[in-house]
Image (cartoon, rainbow, N blue to C red):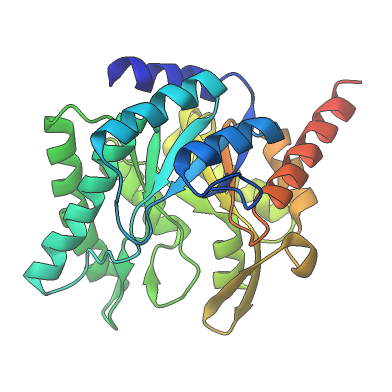
Length: 294
């Protein structure tokens, strides 16, 4: 596991940013993770997020084969944990099941050579954000401590969520990252735009990246895990993901802000047309780099 993990870290720092899609590309020859890795490499993308959102259904042997192929094809992997997680539930059985889903994701992700796992931490359940934060922190700390005791060093990344009923503001995920070793944020800029109705301009994108550096240090900007897509939203935030062409998300200024802050890490596209928008974002980024190098 250690060698695989180290190899993927090397891949992450090969470029300033790597771009990829969430799940197996639509244009892949099959629906397996292996087929997804092959297609992502053929397209010239740099990363892929394995979607375990309906449950972790991969065994050890397959995971090791995935790791070998990902290294061979130079595709950096991450994983999205199941949706059925709530670290703020009062139901002990549901809490333990939620923690177990994070454990399962992290264990298989590690065998796959993934560098991080992403999850939605929970819901406010009409309680005060301060009290909910304390519960989520306590229950997440238990998860991280157990994983580290097992020698699992995959980054654990609570995601910035898109609905106002969900735990996961930008400040909340950054505070968890400050207070729990081994935790870093997954910043979903589309979710944050949908949740706030703002954060869709160059200055606002730049401000978020500056906040990350101020609160978590330069190493956090050098090791980012970003989600992005077009998005439809209403009064209470996210409604559904859209293709970039069908949404108001200002992806060009978003990419320019990432470039100007010299951000590194991975950008995972969650648009319905996934690989098409991932390539669009990558092309935009490379065009900006080329212009800036003249």
